[in-house]
Length: 208
Image (cartoon, rainbow, N blue to C red; front, side, top):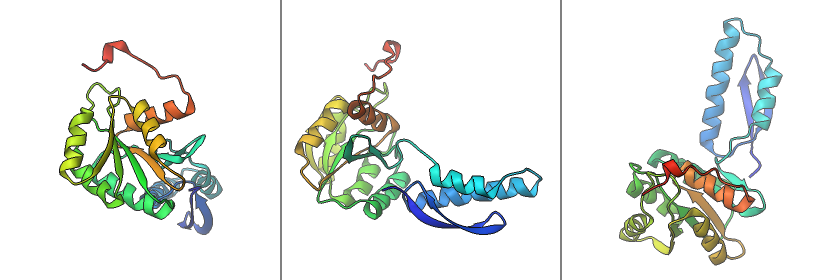
C-alpha cells in the first residue's frame, strides 16, 4: 500500500521510479501530469525531469486510498460516483489482502447511491450506513434500505460517521479491512475520528 513501481517514458528520457499512489487510475493521472509537463517544456518552461520523478515518488493525496494513521486496517477514499467507485473496487483488490471487508458508507445528496453500492457489491461488504455532517448528506436509513434491496448485508446504521467507523472496527476481526467511502465528507470524518483531529464545526451549516 506504499505505492507502485512505474516507468516514466517521456520527459526526454526513461525513468524507473515509484508512484506514491495506488491504483491503475493513478497511473493514468500521472501520465496526464507528465504529458502536461512535457507540453510546458516544449513551450520553453524550465522543468527538471528529476523534479517530476521526485514529485511522483513523494506525492501525497489525502483521502485517496489512504490508510488511516494508527489504524492500519482502515482505508478511506473520497470516491463519490459510480465510475470512481468502480476504480476504487479495482484498486482495493490490487492493493490489499483481506478476509472480509466492512464498508462504512455515506453519500451526499444527489449522489447515485444505488449505482455506487452496485459497484461496491463486488467486494461482498458488510455495510455500516452513516450520515456525515454535510447538510446535504443522504439519510443513513435510506442508504441502508437501498443496500438491503440490492442484497447487501447491513450490520449497522448510524447518524454519525464517528459511531459508524467505531462500530465497523468493533465488528472487524484479524485480517479484515474497514473501508470508509462514498463522499469526501465521510473520508474526512473517519480520519478525524481515528486520528483524534478536532473537527471544524459551523453551526450555520448544520443539517436539519
